[in-house]
Every structure is written in structure tokens, then in C-alpha cells.
Image 1: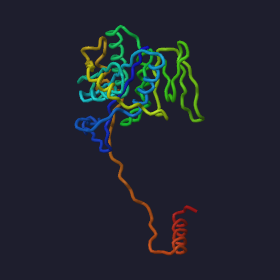
Image 2 (image 1 turned 45 degrees about the horizontal axis):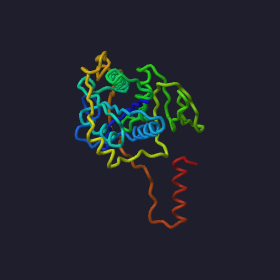
Image 3 (image 1 turned 90 degrees about the horizontal axis):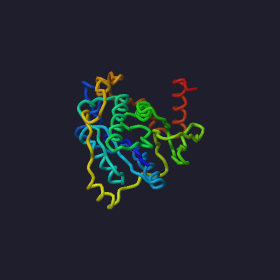
Image 4 (image 1 turned 180 degrees about the vertical axis):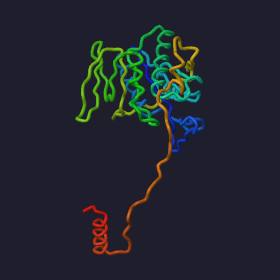
Length: 267
């Protein structure tokens, strides 16, 4: 079984800086981590590999520094790592990102003469919270998709997903290949071991740019190929509108509170 896990490097800080011209995140110099939801997708992949065997490929799109996220996944035990990085991809929105990832996946399949049985993504990235890339990737690849997965099981040639819902969960079955987006769960991602770290040190992260992906349409990539635009960004202004009752005994404080609530029309 061949499993592809899509991961994203995201800022590990609350101090997010925005490029005022492009309205995109400035990632240079900002401490980064692997998107937490993606680590749960990777843990799902590990458990499926333990059950069915096969290989796990990590694929990420981003600047050169995103190789650290790919290597972090290799250190956890993934088999192969690929970084999609190129000037043509800068500023891509979720639609373009899904398209570029699909082109990268096809390039890997052609180069390695394989077909991915399963593509796993985190539910969403913590820096954008759109939850769009996984479903868009499935559309670009023309394969089935199931979102909000809590657990993933195999039954013969089909896959069964326990999908979170408002009422509890649904059991959904689909044939492979498929894209599954994974939620955080009560099974935490595993930590790297000394052995997996030593193995990872010998691995090479393959870098794909626009020249190495056959048939990719550059008009669908980057800012020019992104149908959505961020018009403006701002930090919400914190407002303090509380009312503090001081220097009153219990009864007097209650009376003042009741008067205040009546004046404000609460009751």
C-alpha cells in the first residue's frame, strides 16, 4: 500500500506578520512547526502501514525552509519526503495549492511508477482554518473524498471512515484511491525515536519545482492563478467594557449590580 500524507509548515507564534502588498503571511524568520492536524493524519498513516504494510510519502508545498517540516515527518518514521517549492507557486490560495499538490502527486506517481492508494491530509491548517485544500485536492485528482475522519479502517479493497458529525459519527465507505482529511483524536502522534532519527538522516528530500512537474499549467499557480484575494488584514482592537464594583459590602454590591443591569436593559 502506498500512502501520501500532505503536510504544511505553519507559524509557531501568535505574532503573525502580513505582507501589506500581497496580504499573505510573511514566513521568513518566523519559528515554524508541522501543522498539528497533519501530524494526526501522519499517525493514521503509520497505523495503516502497520496493518497493511507499504510506504508512506510526505509531500509539502512551501519555501525552502519548509523542508524542515518534511524532515520532521521523516524523523517520525515516514519513508520518503518531497517538497514542492518554486517562485511560480508563491502566494497560492487554497485552489491553487490543491492544484499544485495534485500535480506533484502525479509527478511522484510517474517517477516512481506507483499509484497512491490513499492520500491523507489534516482537517485544516491552523494558520488559515479554511479546511479547503483536502477536498480541492480530491477534486483535482478526480477521486473520492471523506472529511472529518476520526478513525480509518480497511475492509478488503474498501476503506471505512468514522466521520465526526453533530449527532455523533457516521460510518462511510468508499473504494480506493481516496483523499481523507483527519481530525485530532485521542490517539496522539508518536514521537521520533533515536532509530527513526538516524534512518531519517540518510534520506534525501526531493525538491520539485515547476520544471519537474509534467503538464502543470502555470496560469493556475501562484497569485495569478488564485481566484480568491485577501482584500485587507487587521488586528481586532481589544475593547474593555466591563463594569467593576469596588469597595462595597455584599448587600450594597448586589444592589448596585441590580441597578446597573436594569439601566442596561438586561431585565
